[in-house]
Image (cartoon, rainbow, N blue to C red):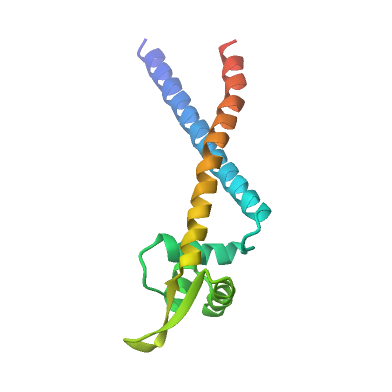
Length: 152
């Protein structure tokens, strides 16, 4: 009797873990689909064409506290300073970010946000806001037939 109760408890725990893993996978799939939809929308618009590294530098500068340096970005993103410099060159060409010598340490270069960069971030947020509900709906529709099969 005791062994049977323990087996039932283990099965219940195992089922709960499997359900949690399925939920985590569904959430990850939703995030990937939102990212894909956002990137496709950005590509289709007549806006800046950024590489993954350039976008990572841009988002790091705009989503985290101000005051980024080339050295700090290189460390945070785990890439070389020349790679950050190339990304900032492109962001500068597009007026999405600008470099300025740090007045307190002339050896250091600060990265500044721009109005055009702030507008681009708002555009990204808007696109993601539109994409997320559609992706959630699509994911729930995909799960519905599977849930029906389990019940049968």
